[in-house]
Length: 199
Image 1 (cartoon, helix red, strand yellow):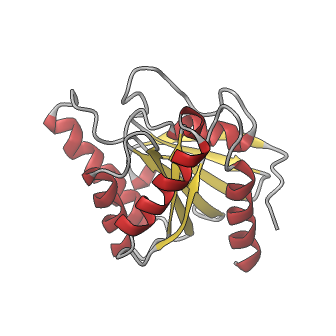
Image 2 (image 1 turned 90 degrees about the horizontal axis):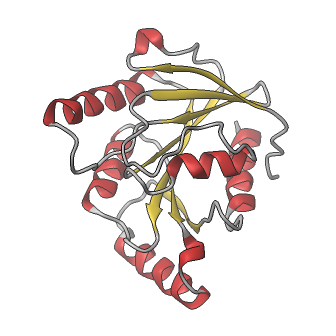
Image 3 (image 1 turned 120 degrees about the vertical axis):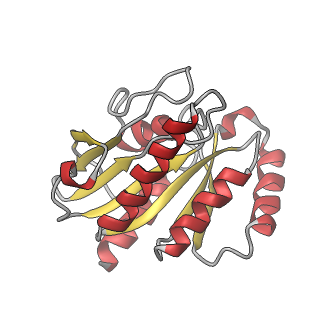
């Protein structure tokens, strides 16, 4: 049963476990390469234009941002990865921040990873999938910006992606998504709703 989002609110930003909000709700987090449309995806799902900060400049999300949905589900926007101009010390800080998040949050139900459909799955996306597999976290691949390609291209890219990632047993869904025309929104809400009901 698809989740019906009636309410969504920003809770807080954090960089380390001692600053995280209480881990009492089922949690879904959103990851992806900088500028893959991760924050826009979260906004579209919640039907809020500016819930999560978006920017044309990659790498703007540099904190872990927590949101409360329907007063009983947690959405989390983690910093994007792979921005070429990011200094090495910032990259190390990102790794520490994200690993701490995965290690300390006990109610994580699933990850949604944004992958620009025009660029495909990259090395850093696979590294994120491997990291989640190590924590037994299921992943949903969201091929974002699907409005930028034709329907025939969408089908071909999805099949290619399924073959490329066939060895990753923690992937439960590969879905096209567009924050412009709403492609994939209902499917995401279905995934979240089913997991919430299961738990």
